[in-house]
Length: 462
Image (cartoon, rainbow, N blue to C red; front, side, top):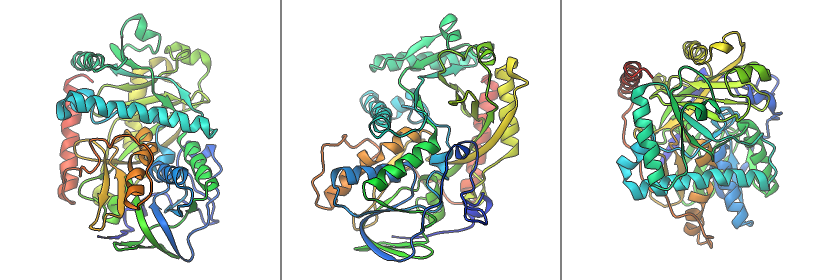
């Protein structure tokens, strides 16, 4: 197995550093942190474990390995600055969601496996809360719950069936309509909803930076500004960055949507973009005008091309989704004017009392999306010493923060170390995502699929 970085995808994105070497943020979250770029790898080193990617997946793996085997020498290679990529610019929703939805998961996996899969997601949500609390990470954690909102009769019928399925499988979802729905949110666009009380929200950039500080305190060496240029399988695995090299007994590829540029699962995990617009801080009377002043639940519309929206700690409304774009050649973009305008139009349709509210920020980032929307993790290569996790398909904040608990035990076992009690490997461990082809086939296929999803949303009134 060999990987080699293609620099073209990142050429269209905002550079992580400016000419003076300072972090150059993208979006609102980066304005809430002080991310001083760390030193790059500038020598040849050896280690027990090299983790490629300093996002939630990589940092959670480092945390788990050091917690259970403090003597392990663990190195993290981050291409930019920890928190600059997807882990620092997502919506901050810590959700127990998987696949398209629960009905889809049951159809694909059956009742028992679907129940186990969703139970795993609840464990992942609780794990995030526990780690933030125990390690006192300041990231604006707020347990808000989550409401899936129905905007059409067709979606309402499916949502009712999903609610009944969730109750049958033992989950404590609540059906909301009338006054019960209005207690969470008010809009003529929303007919009903399903409430899950366990979801929470965070400031994702603060969480990423807090996790970096956490693992460094445990003895992990984190090298920023150190993009992986080449990887060559072997014993040890050999990795090359711009200024240094690493010889590692084991490697964890924690690259998710960025893996395609390395040639890692580029035909299986696609670098799809989602975008966000953010309002100015709202006054209490503005929030009360749409019924959002009291319970502060996180919200999502029941569409194919969803909208997701939440309140920040300073009462801004974050409003995202509306489209999911794969750019030709897997290129990265931090802004898309057409999507941003569509988001603002949808926002004003949902909330007429807020039509004069100003938008202060627009940004976007990558998802790692598989064809069936299920994640994947396991071992790759022929020697059993290269591990990975990714393909979260838009539901990655909870699961990527739990990745260490799901993958690191296998890494310890493969290294002959005593692996502690760990969650049972999920259905997606060792499961390779379906093949989707290379561009132009991949690109054209995604465009056609987006058109179908948008047409279905239109005709269903969603």
